[in-house]
Image 1: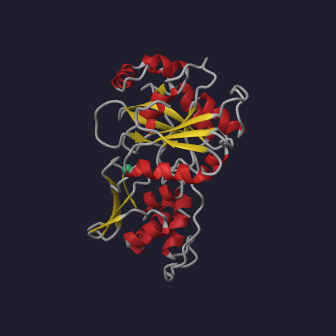
Image 2: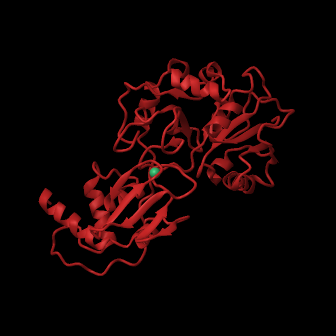
Image 3: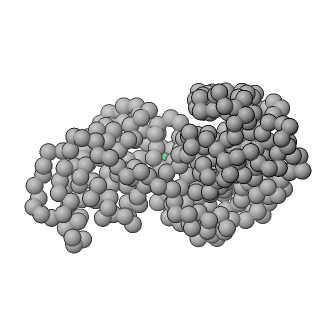
Length: 349
Ligand SMILES: [Zn+2]
């Protein structure tokens, strides 16, 4: 297809896919949505959030327009279809166009411009992926010790976190402004670093493999407190300290843990609490707990299965609706197999 042909096809698809609600439902983005005139607000597929702030609506020209008031991403129907499929709307445009054509019920090649009826059956979209492992490892390797970047050190200090301990345990790093970032580390308008998202934490899958990164904003500014790689899947990943990674990697009781005591695990919510708990214990303390950090979508049965039978799990999520939901998910996935305690916010583990 020539560029002109694909641009014509894109215009045709834009004129067909104009029902914001229907499209969001078919893309799996409508859960938790709230209506607005000519469309709806959905939980933003570009950043993690609890309340929907991403507007998908029919613009005055009749086509769908997307704008997130949380992370300031703006786009059209192709950007939305791309992000819902873990694709990049520029790099992967031919694939995005094919998926869009199928959703619109128009042929994706130029075998006649017949506009068939829209496909009603929900298309099984490909599972969104995590960012390429080598990109993740490369960006993590390019990051600096947290004490090297004054804004990051100041943010840690403001949270009563010990930058030295964060460095010693290598729990988080600072993003240098000069780093060359993959396309997913930012929006179309600015990079994580430019927007002040300079505290970087690794996210691990149920086998202890670093699959993604999270960036926390360390200066005052607009937008969400943290960002995940744009356009990629974030679910099923947790923050983990060294012992937490041993648990995930082996799926067994760590050998360093004395037989006489149960394995202790703390599940904390969000970056500050994860870092607080993960820096609280000396690595010489052989009864120190493993610490896992959860965010929206983190906890899965796959993660739960890696925790050994008989473990003593303290859930330290926030006492709000989201925190209670995470706590319930952890509880349901472990009950009968582990001892589960609901910790207060700043109690003793
Ligand atoms: Zn957003």
